Image 1 (spheres, chains in turn green, yellow):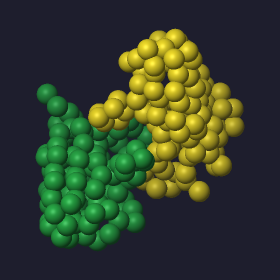
Image 2: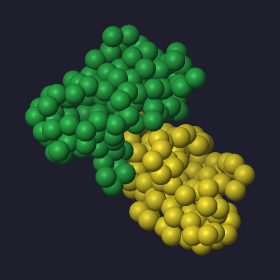
Image 3: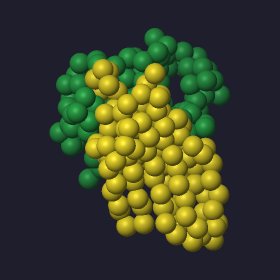
Image 4: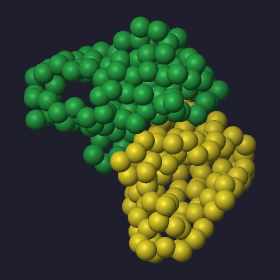
Length: 115
Length: 112
């Protein structure tokens, strides 16, 4: 069973379109995250949710809107896609927030290509 | 600030050679985590270091946390082709609950 699963794995779309990526974890974790990995492999946190509550919202354009219907799901919706949004988006979860540090469990990633 | 600097960015080695990546912070770290990402894969947790001067080993991998808790290293002895990938250190967020900040990563290539 996949612990953290994301769909879709690949997404190719035109500039200006709106798209969503879904994430689910079956680990019973309280905290979920979205990370963006650019072409240089740099991993940057975008959002963090703890028990459906938004905890971290980094400097991310408001075209990106996360939604957590329950603590096992964290979806990412992106409006008006731009070329610079092309990246791999990783969902992750942890048992607890980083205050006491828990390891992150990452999904397999969703590679978004904006043409 | 909250960043961790990781060097080198790239490392090419011959199979059997050793490899080390370093992670440095200007501020004291509460702890440090290390992750490995295989090509085309996702980051996978390797280890967490918490105590000053801590040294932990996993087979051919040796992880160290500096005495001042401002730096850390990952050393691989006698690299194998299965070691290829990107190695990341990551620091917990201090006052930012739920934030793990990653270093830039070291991309390791092992030539057979």
